[in-house]
Amino acid sequence: MNTELRQVTHIDNVRLGEDEKSVVIIDQTQLPNRTVYRTLRTAEEMFDAIRLLQVRGAPAIGICAAYSIYALARQWETGDYDAFAERFHAAKEYLNASRPTAVNLSWALGRMEGAVTAHAKSPVEEILNLLGRECRAIHEEDIAMCRAISEHGLGLIRDGDGILTHCNAGPLATSRYGTALGPLFLGRERGMNFRVFSDETRPLLQGARLTSYELQRAGIDVTLICDNMASIVMKNGWVQACFVGCDRVAANGDAANKIGTSGVAILAKHYGIPFYVLGPTSTVDLSCPDGDHIPIELRSPDEIREMWYAEPMALPEVKCYNPAFDVTDHTLIAGIVTEKGICRPPYTKSLAALFRDRE
Ligand code: MRU
Image (cartoon, rainbow, N blue to C red; front, side, top):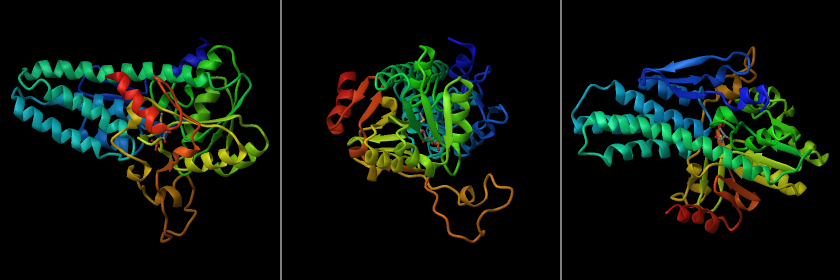
């Protein structure tokens, strides 16, 4: 693999600190201009890192939360199981409230808490060791899932294809290859060439700041477009497939992802372009029947009114609506690419089968 590609796909975006009482992240809000590593020690720092999108992307949030709760637990000096479990539960609830939409957050924290409750009779020190293993397993499994998703996704496209993506579902948002961008990195590794169109992704510009940065650095042909240019790019015949990530996939296949994703899917349908959602099974929430049940995060109006601008671009009193995600209706999705393979409609059946296989 060439060095540039490796530098992008093998970054340590989230890791446990050497003392195992802290978590180290790349602060994604500083990219692409500065690569800043931040060490998170307190629960508040961990909560804020997720809330402020210093660490972002559904799988990365889950991994960060798992490492965070382990690092916090290592700091507590108690040998009493009940006191430990109570504190663990409070920390879990606190971290879980940092962002509502990506189910990976509660999934990872739930797995960590499961290790505590399943070993109620064990000494706290032993539970801590189990927790250390569990958070590392969550991370390692995500690496494997991203790699498998990349393989499955690569089978959907051909050398020379144009791919449109929205937001960032690459290595920074996940582990190693990423999900929606994974097939592109893997294909590049194998000598294939793609033309990628990266929506800038208003209002937080994950496409401009992160996706085009990752692809450009990896030597992949990427063109940055404003979100409202997706239609003309499709009309020009430059897009053969859309690849996007996801934050929560409901049992019927409705998929929440960064705001603007559903608009891309509607356009893709109009132009007859297949629209694929790529994500690990940790993002599938079978307890959620459909998109109407997915909680959608609302963020500060300042992200629309003034963030990024030298001076505000709207009156301070102007009313704003700033949902961070939208839900793409399952009827617009040609396939949901998971590590276990590609789910096709009807999703109620194909998604449920993913979990039956696991049993
Ligand atoms: O608000 P963000 O930047 O965390 O939103 C992230 C996305 O919408 C990603 O596409 C999603 O989490 C998938 S990351 C593999």
